[in-house]
Length: 159
Image 1 (tube, helix red, strand yellow):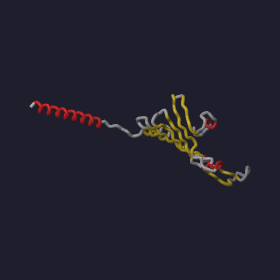
Image 2: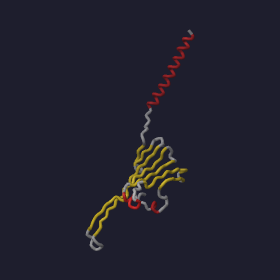
Image 3: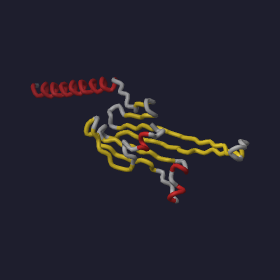
Image 4: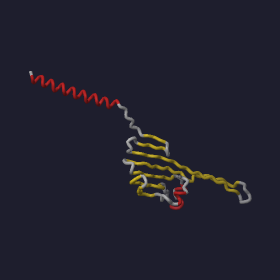
């Protein structure tokens, strides 16, 4: 009789344990976790993972040019008109895995901005950099891009 009681006691204890485990899993399942990416429009269109594992920011820039040519310097009658897209750029920046490792990619889509006429082939990639941030004020970058303090960077219309 004692063995039967012991067997029933163990199975009852096992059932109680399973019931406790099932009820805690049910309680955890009731808490709603929002795992969607955070989307913001602070500096472009940004997609960020709430866990800070992934971040992507997309920016777009277009620079148009319109011109009117006259017959001569004294005769200001319009001879012809021209309009073109001087710059059409798409920029991606963000981080993957760790916020200390960031990337920056800028693509060019207008013929005049791709150096097509000088080289004979389109140079779509303008900048492609990978950075490691040692601290907020000290970082190191590898890749292709403009120098941070040069004249092009300082007088750029993209800033």
